Amino acid sequence: MKIMVAVKRVIDYAVKIRVKSDKTGVEMNNIKMSMNPFCEIALEEALRIKESGLASEVIAVSMGSNQCVDTLRTGLAMGADRAIHVDTTSTLYPLSVAKILKALIDIEKPGLLILGKQAIDDDCNQTGQMVAGLLKWPQGTFASKVVVDKEKQVARVDREVDGGLETLCLDLPAVITTDLRLNQPRYATLPNIMKAKSKVIKKVTPAELNVEIKSDLELVQVTEPPKRKGGVIVSSVDELINKLKNEAHVI
Amino acid sequence: ASTLVLGEHENGHMKQSSLSAIEAASRAIGVGEEENSISVLLAGSGESLQKAVSHAAMSHPSISQVLVADSDKLAHPLAEPWAALVHLIQQSGGYSHIIAASSSFGKNVLPRAASLLDVSPITDVIDISGPKLFVRPIYAGNALCTVRYTGVNPCMLTIRSTSFPVSLNSADSRSEAAPISQVDLSTFSEDSVGKSRYVNHTSQDTERADLGSARVVITGGRALKSAENFQLIEKLAAKLGGAVGATRAAVDAGFVPNELQVGQTGKIVAPELYMAFGVSGAIQHLAGMRDSKVIVAVNKDADAPIFQVADYGLVADIFEAIPELLEKLPSKK
Image (cartoon, rainbow over all chains, first blue to last red; front, side, top):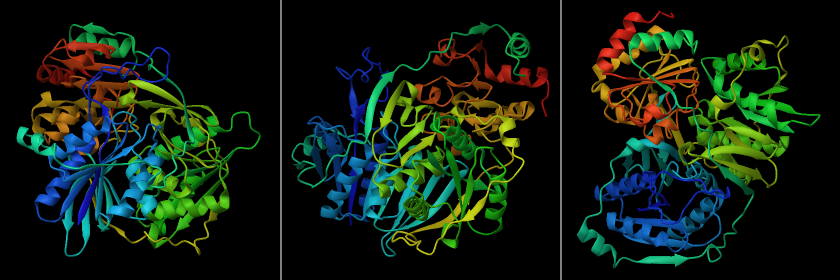
């Protein structure tokens, strides 16, 4: 069984973003970029499944400009066997990403597609669900535990839902999206970074995959959220209780 | 506009977050239009569904009708049959908008349904500026993005329920139940139904106030040091009739279950009073609580970023401050 993992290049989670003054987006020049943390967790899970003998190959996929190759190199250094770069400069919304992933899956025929539950830039939380819908595969979103049963061809997935944990049993092939507590991703070691340089990154375009990039959303503007007014520092619990009672009227 | 709201129910009641989705539909989408019908879809099976339907039909003055899909295939709120159901209903209903709350249910189901209908959904809408114009947070709420939907019907959204609070009188002001109709499921079939099976659901505690809709939220961070110490937070929450929240660090350390996490990837809350104890204030946490009306932060570290968003900050040892609060605060319950 092959496992495909989608990875996205995003502004590093530790960077404090700045909204551009012309409201067209956020500042991207000279900003540290990294693999989306949820995608790292997705890749880590795929590698662990492979290391436990339940999968034969892990394929990392990324989409966008040429710089996505850096993200794919990181994935290869973590342990992915090979990578696919879908080369495009078009704006990709999740529906298009899902269609491209479906086209790649029709070619590669993996038994599992693992993705992060959301990217920390657009916070959409859609792609996994959408590709599962297009493929008519079952989906296990927001996974905090995944157990693959090779014999029965099922995956048992614990999902983090509003009211606790939900366990589902999915027939393979299936789509899984990862939550934070699924695992702790590994760091790429220097020898593995060197080894990754000789691994293959295949390049394709959406047109070669016969996917038309649909644009049914228009970005109107990006603005700063309203700032909270600075508060006061109180000196004691008594003063705090007094303020909450007589000034804020919340207790 | 004609809107379909995907309703969630539990224990014979439609959830508060679904009422917020109806509120969003009624308040904004039909602005300037003569007709603005709102259909609420509930699915499930058996008695609990029937009770929820009766509740839903009385729950909001703007509801035009309640659609009921009663089937064993829909007994659990799984994405596969639900997405197929939405697809089926859209084919005959031709709705202009389909809305769900940004709950774990809405986030799981709505994008899958959108892919079947070949439209781009819009996640976590916090403001509706026009029938096709929406504001949503990006980068953990550090920027707000305005998007226009330019595609064919339906326009599909999940809404952040804290941004569309339901006023108490609107929830009570219906004298007559909305009409109820059964969805014709004779053509309901879908290849992927059955490929996903519900096994079980575990929840640690149902006694607590609901984090998403509580008036008061008391949150603890890593500084609580243990699950045992976290009971101080729970006692304070009980005293104020509030819900318990936690930071990612506190959840990862095993002090409390995951469902209590507040933040970018956890619950988004906007209570009247948010009290954070031993919380440093990482941007991912602030994303989940920055819209609270009054924020109180108690932390020993005077430089903690949480103080920058707090209305009232107290630099103190939480293990001294919480017991003192427990002693001096008036009891709410």
